[in-house]
Image 1 (cartoon, rainbow, N blue to C red):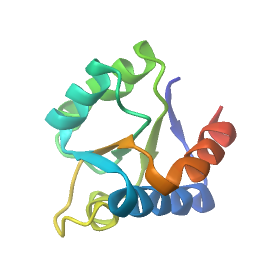
Image 2 (spheres, rainbow, N blue to C red; image 1 turned 30 degrees about the vertical axis):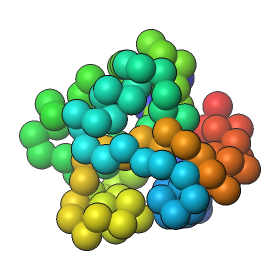
Image 3 (spheres, rainbow, N blue to C red; image 1 turned 90 degrees about the horizontal axis):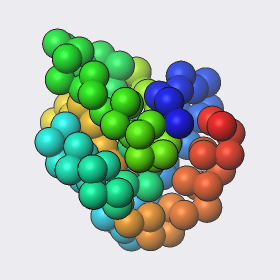
Image 4 (cartoon, one colour; image 1 turned 45 degrees about the vertical axis):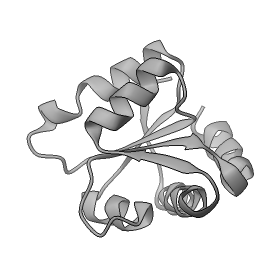
Length: 114
């Protein structure tokens, strides 16, 4: 599964999934943590911000996700991604490793991006 551009309403669903998983599941934040989660095969959904500078920081994540058959979605803003993850700072990547109550939202996202 390659990194996929998604429409605005899907981006909102992605942020919603992250917010729900933050309170009822478990997230990994930042490129190093997300890379480890993908390599270990525990990530359920990977989200990458488009405005990462330099882009080399996250270039490997969509490729690695595809190798491990983990869905990877691109969102426009590091700031919004960080806010959805509840860290108050911009973040380049987030991986949902335990869905919690976001399981149905994640299934919906994966079905629509395939």
